[in-house]
Amino acid sequence: MAAGGSTAGMGRAQERLDAAERFLQEAEKAHPVDELRVAKAELGVAKAELGVAKAELKAAPQEEKATAELGVAKAELGVAKAELKAAPQEEKATAELGVAKAELGVAKAEWQAAPKESKDQLWKLVECAQAAVDPSDQPPRFRQFLDEQRRRDEEQQSREEEKERKREDEQRKILAALETSRPPSVHGSITPSSAAQGRENEFYNLLDQMGLSWPPELSTLECSSSIEGTHDNFTFSWKRSTGLSTHFEDLSMQSEDGGVTSALLGSGEDIDEEEASHVQSADDIEEEASHVQSADAREAASYGELCSFLQKRGFDAVVIGNGEGLPNRLLFSTYAHSMRQQVLTVKGQAVYTGMRVYGRTDLVILDNRGRQGEVRRQRVKLGIEVKPADKIGRCEDASNPASREAATQLIGLNINNMYNTPPVLLTNLQKIHWVFYISDHEEHPWFRMARKKFSRFIDALRFVEEHLWATNKCHYEFGRGSSPAESEGISA
Image (cartoon, rainbow, N blue to C red):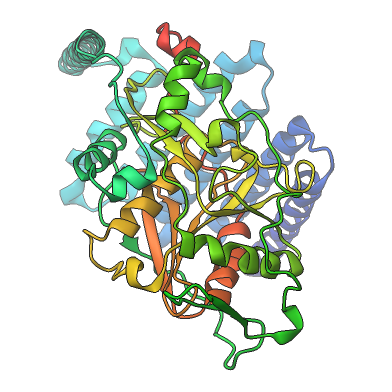
């Protein structure tokens, strides 16, 4: 009869626990969540678990009583913790004492259930729990142990605080040293054509100033499979004779006049606000603009057909090979700056001004932020540099002049560009087409130059559309200088 009563008691206790758990689930799923209701529901579950533990103790045989009593003690600790969580602020101290007493009960139950060889060790836990409940009950040796432990903790905290102060002082000294040793703005300038011919060392200096590696890394981005055949591709037949001929592989795209349309050429300011402090005199700009070479006659012969091909594909393409419609015949004129060493979100980093990069490409494709054909650097989505077949050479070779020219154009187009991250397509309009672009990374160096080769112009263009334009990233921090607030030592 007693066994049946115990079983029935356990059944009722389990039913109460199930009901409490359902009430807790309802409280947690309510919207909005009532934290007090959840805390009370958790207390109900804890009390129901205590009821189950007591029923199990009642039903346990004599040899299992100690283990069952430990279960009851742990359940009582769960109730005490739930009461602490649900208690109002003015009753927290009393509830904390209840938790301490329950922990003492668990310690005693564990000691009671432990084998003889472990009892001495477990009794120390009982003494610790007893001390938490009533410090006056602490034995002298234990009080001495607590005092020593408290002293060691205070000494350790003091050492940590001193170490942190020293670290902060060291950081301040480093920042001060960097600021005092900060070099003045590096005078000098470079154009894409001069990077390709005669000023190779300045080109490598530019890369060093910006923290960029050479040659650009080969891209691992996968392209959509090339469509075989000649449909919708573009090639140009280079001939040294006067009678240059062109050929569209899609005859439906044939241009009627083949000439360079100047009606679509626009103009616009291209000097960034950030560069206002670097503005030079008109004589200096005119003199430097004279160093931007005019387009090769054979290259220029291809511009009209290529521009017409792109326009008929729906692109806002413009020929600017000779600086048509550009202020001072320059597409970009900007100062390079060193790459930040820490993550880009950290403010106040030391940034050094490097060379001025200025020049243009042969053709550009523009975005839709402006009138058709209105050329401004911030509108450029793609720069195209055309080279005759005998001039482009092997771009796999790091010393190739055409690669240096395209890389300089890439840098000039992307420095502190808030709107686009334009790649540069270097092409001989036959079977060599290289796409140069800026890639960003989660570790330093944050920006790198990358390149990918194609055997068909249309495939290179498709790669730009699908992989570079589609991400719609703007590497605003690339080559960016300090803001006025940062230059004054203020985080911004």
